[in-house]
Image 1 (cartoon, one colour):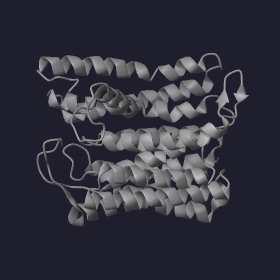
Image 2 (cartoon, helix red, strand yellow):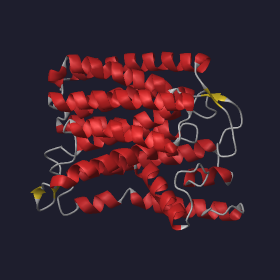
Image 3 (cartoon, rainbow, N blue to C red):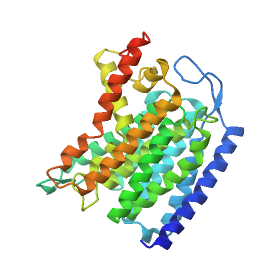
Image 4 (cartoon, rainbow, N blue to C red):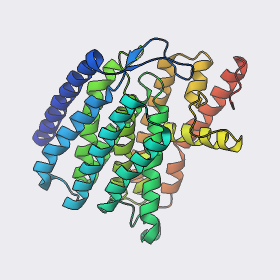
Length: 351
């Protein structure tokens, strides 16, 4: 890719960021409002559904990419699957913002959108493993991909409970993923991650503490869904073994928080679907830690995961599995730190 072409891509992304920001401002003025309650972190009514700007910028960009789809490396059926699935999750999650559907309804909608992507052929098929090369996992591919997409979608939705946290993490992940995809010549992943980053850049200034607007489900679910699908695309990087772990490395903060919290609540016999304030980032906030500091910690986790991905790209086969573990180390430190803060504040961190 030439320098001139890269500048054109950045200019196009900047234009989409402006469009995203303009739509976010409209949502602040005319969109739905999120009212505070006992399980939420904000104290005053705040506009939500700012994620409409993110989704609209991405879908506009992806429509242009489809018009000139020779730029993409994915075959046409896969491309159509991505477009159909992204439109479906955007529409359904926006309706969820308006009508606050039960979790079961959300889950069914997410499964339908994920199925649309998988049915187009976009699922984990032959991951490259050290010593074994491309390994056909057969019938396990589609269900594993469905689980992955739904889990990441909900993880980003759950983690979107603090100003700037989810949007900042998604933006950092997109920037790293776009750069890595460009290095690998994976042009669809490069451009799609860049488009999502553009939408997030237009939104994030309005979401920094104290937030003028929240992403809403239309933003958090859409970002989680698209990052999950980009993770499946990354699994097809032909020259990189274990490339399917790169997006989990970038999202180690949200994924570990959600996985740990769900496991803890499940082992305690608590409901996994009932709203609560027991995620680690929420416990840190309840212990008195400033919102910006918590969000900044998660931005740091994403940036560290990105740096680990860069090391991972150049590591030899025998060391690659070791590099994948590195993003988990800050999570252990974070868990211990939140536990100490909660204990000092008299908060039961396992409630």
